[in-house]
Image (cartoon, rainbow, N blue to C red):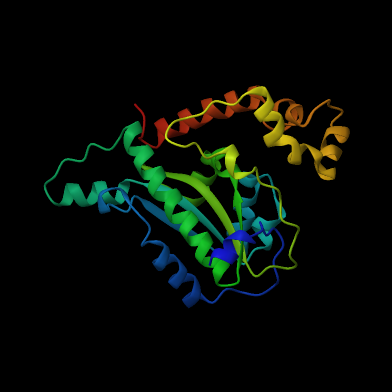
Amino acid sequence: MFETVKNRRTIRKYLPKDINPILLNDLLETSFRASTMGGMQLYSVIVTRDAEMKEKLSPAHFNQPMVKNAPVVLTFCADFRRFSKWCEQRKAVPGYDNLMSFMNASMDTLLVAQTFCTLAEEAGLGICYLGTTTYNPQMIIDTLQLPELVFPLTTITVGYPDGIPAQVDRLPLEAAVHDEKYHDYTPEEIDKLYAYKESLPENKQFIEENKKETLAQVFTDVRYTKKDNEFMSENLLKVLRQQGFLK
């Protein structure tokens, strides 16, 4: 498994080969052994195989082709509804309609999602995380008919890889590991830590294509702008209120 993780790639193209339901269920069931807040398992997973349902989900993910081409699309949801219903049916009063509960359910959900991905890759499958889930949560809620206290957190496409793409870069270990306490970065350290990323031909191409001076400007001015982040933040808060996690 060490080598599987070291050599992993994000897979966006899949062979026209179905995933055996027994294998998929085994991967999901095993991933549910991941750490969970108080043993509550605050997540649900919506399994989408039907082509018509993939078509309906596609616009929420900006019509990225892997949504319709992958044999399976998994929507991992933070879910306090099931646990709250259990409480109510056992003469207990749930108090989970708040931000802290959403955070706890979110952590549970992402732990399960990543555990599933690691297991799936070890089994020879390829996966792709879709960050668009929290961009367009309302569309996904409507399509999947998610009730109150259920919120879509991440979507993963799964299938057998159609080719193996090049592995993308990662920052060196010292960029993210701090001994004993946080060590803030000097300008010289920033230069050193980002030197390799900035030297890659594909990243130089990004700068040229977007008519920018630096790679950082591609991120701040084009890919992840303040304006877009503020708009999506407002939308996220709106839908969290609608789903019962904020008052």
